[in-house]
Length: 132
Image (cartoon, rainbow, N blue to C red):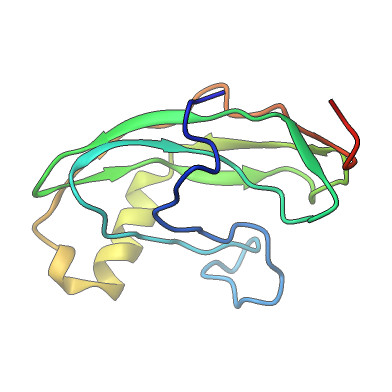
């Protein structure tokens, strides 16, 4: 687990919400973009149940460079969240997703995006409040 888990946060991006209109016609999902300062970052999944405690938390490190964008991929959950495990993987859908981002945000048309698809970003395990 990274050193800064829950210590500070830049932003949260919702990935599993059936109440938000999907950006796609073939599955529930949406494209998110964040504007963050240049620097080194770690991305963690967060389970939204206040009665659960993270036991194993995968993360991915990446660097944002001034004037460039970084594409982390589509976080795809092959099944809905369960109470004990969240199963998802990052997939490279850059062509589709970046076209969508540029269509909705014309100011990003000239931004160069690097691709950094997270590998081994599964295995998030939670337990009850008394878990060790």
